[in-house]
Structures are given as C-alpha cells and as structure tokens.
Image 1 (tube, rainbow, N blue to C red):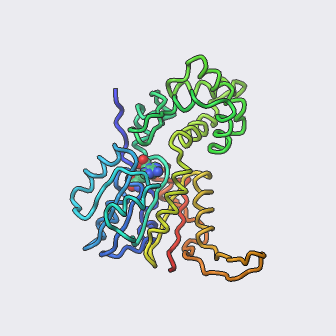
Image 2: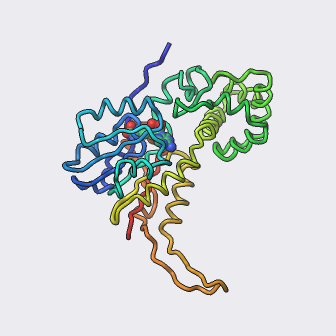
Image 3: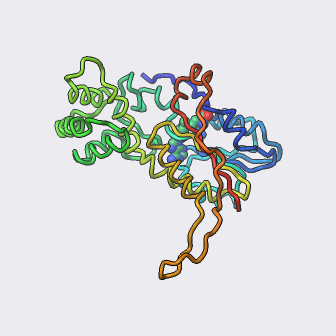
Length: 311
Ligand SMILES: C[S@@+](CC[C@H](N)C(=O)[O-])C[C@H]1O[C@@H](n2cnc3c(N)ncnc32)[C@H](O)[C@@H]1O
C-alpha cells in the first residue's frame, strides 16, 4: 500500500523572495523544486523573465511540472544541483540573477513510507532522493564496514554513542537483518537498551544514513559553488539549511567566497590583495518567525544565509 504524502509547505518563503530581490525580467534558478512552492512564488513575480527549477527526485519533478504548468516561462528539469553549470550551459544561459537552494528532504519524501525516510511508518530501507540511482540505504549499509558506519553517524548525525550503534548495525547487516526502516530503528534501540524510552538517536541515525546514501554534503558544496559562480553581478544566492552539518557547509563556502584573496610572491611576501567576488548579505543567519515555527514545525531548525555577486 502506498501512503499519501502531505504537500510540502515552503519554508521562509517571504524572506527568500525578499532576499532574492526578484526583477520581473530576470533569470532565476530554484535548485530544489520539491513541491514547487518557492518556485510558484518566484514564477508569479516574473514578466519576461525565466525560472529554471531543478530536483534530483523524479517524483518531485513530476509534481512541480504539474503545479507550475500555468507558467510557460518555467522549465522544470530532473538534475542534481551539483551539475547546475552544465544544465545552464545546455540551455544557453550564461548567467542568472538569483538562485534559491532549499536543502535537504521534502515533507513528501518523509511522509511516504515506501521511500524509506520515515521514522514513524515502516518501509523498505531505501532513502534515495534520486530513485533512478542504484544504491539504496540497505545496500549502502551492507557495503560499509563498522568503522565507516561509525564515522557517518558521528559526522552527519552528531550521534554520541556512534561506535556502540554502528557495531549493532554492522552485526545485523551480516545476519541479513537490515532490510526495513524498522530494522534500523530496532538496531538503535538494541544498542541503547538501557534507555527506558525511545532514543532520540533513532532520528539522528536516520538523518546520518540518509546524508551518506545521497552524498548530500558533497553535492551541497558543489552546488553552492556552481550557483555562486553562475550569478551575474548583483545576483544573489540564498541558501536554507536544516541541520548543523548542512549549515556548516553553507557557512564555510560563503565565508570562503566573501573573503579577499591574497596573492603571494614565491618567497611568501604579499603581492596583492584582491577584492572578493561576493559580499555577504546576511550578517547572521535568518531563522523563521515564531508564527511560522508554530504553523509549520518542520521549519523550526531552518537557517537562511545569502551572498551577492559583487563583480
Ligand atoms: C526542502 S525540499 C524543497 C522544497 C521546495 N522549496 C518547495 O517549496 O516545495 C528539498 C528538495 O531538494 C531536493 N534535493 C536535495 N538534494 C538535491 C540535489 N543535490 N540536487 C537537486 N535536488 C536536490 C530533494 O529531492 C527535495 O525535493
């Protein structure tokens, strides 16, 4: 039986639109179309402009195409945002006026048990965002040794007892008992069986495995750099992150891009300091207003940062 997903509510939509400073005749990219919520708002502000919307999930692409079918100036493409420059080159677009990147998973992906992201409903241990890729979470766990699983739990989920949980997961994989999301949750419970209630580590272990299966942080870093260098002067890149691993990547890449470069002579003396090609627009990350957090609890952990191309 397939479960029916809740439609994804776009997070910090007003703030994103305001930071993008949409020009009606501009060219914009929504790097993460999802259910098309942000795209719909951007598309509604265009007159003579264009919007290119990407998603790596074929289901999200189908949904956004349907939702945005009334806007002929919108093109929805199945692509990874880490290939943004190739996508734009294929459309003969040399630069864009703004990019929005709303990282992570959508409500639809989480709510559909058969996608394998849900903590609440049992499903196959899948977790692929791009369902055309071969390796799902069960295959990733089966091919990873205990040390690799421990590293991923620690780095991508900030899981404290990562070694303990990784040992149980690896043992269950060996015994061919790691096929369903309920198997992964059971492994965490077994590793932390001294706890009276369900451990919060179930959530962080699912997050870590999902990030590893989809190589999310690698793509995020590439996607941010490609988006930034695709901007025309004055164009803005707005990024929304949902957990500390994503925010660390956004913060680091934005800091690098907005820092002046120092050119050195071979002997180490400073030859020249060049002005940075980007400037920071948000001194501190923006977070959702209390009303949005109340109405859409999934927005609670969101952080929004933006940079602008200076030259
Ligand atoms: C938080 S949702 C975006 C929701 C969207 N802004 C809306 O208003 O409905 C994130 C989306 O990004 C997609 N995604 C995640 N990583 C991606 C990547 N590397 N390339 C392209 N899409 C990606 C996911 O498949 C998911 O649909």
